[in-house]
Length: 440
Image 1 (cartoon, rainbow, N blue to C red):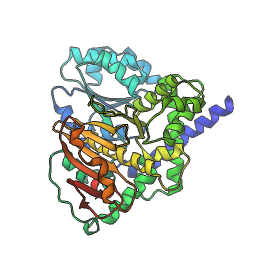
Image 2 (cartoon, rainbow, N blue to C red):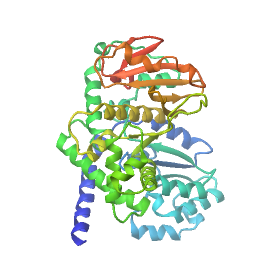
Image 3 (cartoon, rainbow, N blue to C red):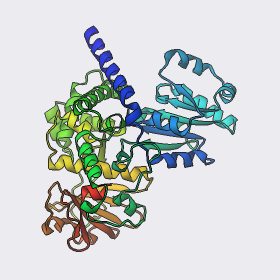
């Protein structure tokens, strides 16, 4: 037990050191959410902003940059936390009228203090940070309902990875421009002046994911792999233990790996339970933990047409390719399913950072017709087929045809996203677009 404690301490130190080494470079990337957070904070309803997301997504760095005049309070300091607990609402108002409270979920009583300040005084403004969604949001819902605005921060998107410093503007991707109702001219990729940089960024994303600490191209690949390995260990030892109070991590790590192996595929809870040696309910519980700690995205099956025989099993995608590859202990090229997960995760992140109210599904009929990603907007659907192939054929569009016979809203766009560099219209207004063009 003593040796294990020493090992974990060393692991945590390594993660911390890597974060310090690469903080200046890695976290200088601009974030699309910056303007959104500032706008929310300036509103009458933004006196308390809750910023949540996975560990190491850059929450602290972002809010310190956006709110330089706010006092920074770390809840992880055991000596100071005891003093913060003793403060009355009046003292908070006097000493910390504007403040950032980091890892707030570790001290639920402080949420009550912030509530009291909010109710008794009109000027204080607070930013609350936390990396454990269930603990943070449970306290928020119970104590700060109607008093706060919640914002989620994800690993870097590809447009954010293309920035070199904080001041660089983040340009909307082709997908984001469609989603936000803006027009963007599609030119042949090789004629894009930035095509070399975009290809480099996409290749890096598919290998290492989008965590800010390892986003700088000057960091050697081996150091990026080591950072990711330590990140996964830290996630297991801190987030999962805090979240679920799991004493023995082996069953969880088995399920985690099985989910990574089966990424982008229909989830069979019973089969996975047999392979992991746990119950089906335990698999579902572990998947919930991974979802609420921002490690996976559960994609429900679209099933609102009672006249059609539709599969109702969900799909699971890892939200970061680097983490998924690390869980699999994999460095070689992505499989088709792994590539699909990488693209779905990027589309999901890009949708969320521009604050679009959309829902995500997959669709599969019992006779084998399948749509990898169905994005529901207010006006209709965007249907997407994802292929790792470098050569898209007309037959690849077959599942995208005649969707209006199944869906309850019109299909606004049909896309085949692939590694084929030849963007073109195939049939029935189905656009074949390179992933690199669609997402940058």
